[in-house]
Image (cartoon, rainbow, N blue to C red; front, top):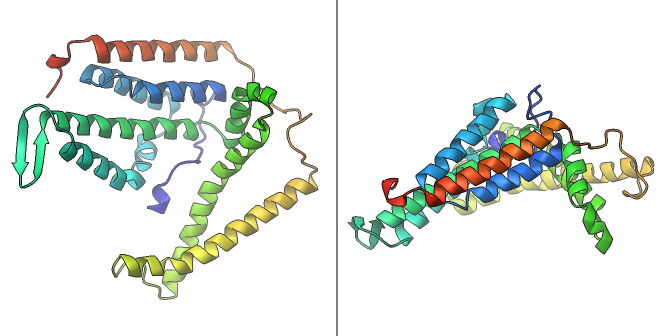
Length: 274
């Protein structure tokens, strides 16, 4: 499962999505995620599906890499489906077993929430796959720049987010190495009840925390030795500048949001239910 966590990873490729300004990708991803909660019918999700897989195709990122990021949230997805399936009432009863009742509204809500969660993870993964951590830092700092007027440390916030994203794949790789080392020494990490499995994680968590603090200390010393003093007066080697393709990308995303919301809200709902 550790190898299946894809957040913070970058997939290098030459694609139109990779070449977009990182600010465009962040804003577009936010609009896409918001749009998933603005409709609740099949036509809206069809438009969202076409848009999402069209972007994946343009990005040249293999679909298996995108789907790989769904494995760690399988339990969360299953819990979400079950809670919505059995706790949502309304409509005709489809199944009644003991105290559990499945209704049309519960089934519809469970399916839509599952689709929203899956599409949300896929959309966010696509942004991180096509944007380097450095570009994400610059984009976040640029988008939050107006907050400097109210003395919000925008540069420091963006730097912390960038460092956190960089550390995720490093710590996952370190965790995998520690687990393999402990298994080679005879540690049993799979058998036993929940309490025994939790105790078995201690030999993994202790060296992982020690390694994380050591890496953080080394990074802090490296930044100090290079005279890092925050964002004031700093220049950028590659300043962010909007181009024509970025404007076209904004237009395409806005058109998608309008079409998806219109299709999901104004088309006859009763024609599209199960």
